[in-house]
Image 1 (cartoon, one colour):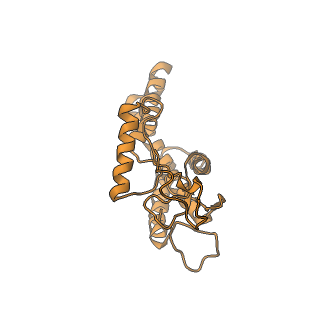
Image 2: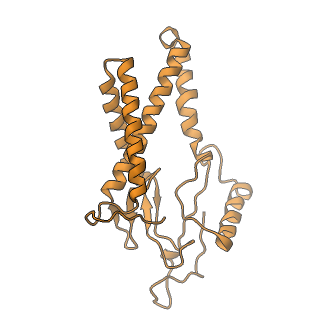
Image 3: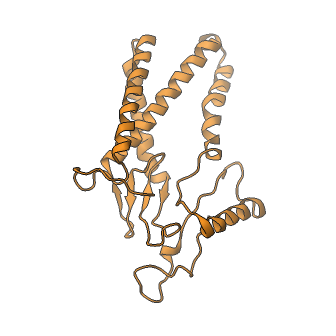
Length: 224
């Protein structure tokens, strides 16, 4: 992943964000404000919804640091690139020494994006609840609606969103594609619980018999 640049900020504040992300963040803040105004018109407890959804987004952003991790890699980056943690936006850089460095601006941008997504989910839930007459439905129907509206789409997201992984091209892309197809069709690794496979470059872990700055790239191939 290409690292961003925000001149004028202290070291360690941002590793991936750039000025374009800040412009998009302004649009995100405006969208959040509009959603808060909409909830204010729906209920007098709108501020509770705003606070709870923000806390939920904060927890999701923090949890993504541990759930989504791409170690340093050489696939598609011959000179070697640092890894990253976080999803849907990268929030922390993983150095070649294995250190995780969290960028404050990166973390806040990811939290803002997740906050907007969670608020949109509450809006959709509210509209669907009004349309089906939520208060007049049985518990069984309510549970079914929750499963179909939130749990099923959440569970199927890996089928539509690519997992965090290095970007490859050319011969490396062909090798990765063949390895993924073999894992999915021949070995049948994917299924109900494992829906998508991600590329992981393990070459930085291979021994370097020449004691060079870069590992022996012929020793271990990328794997999925």
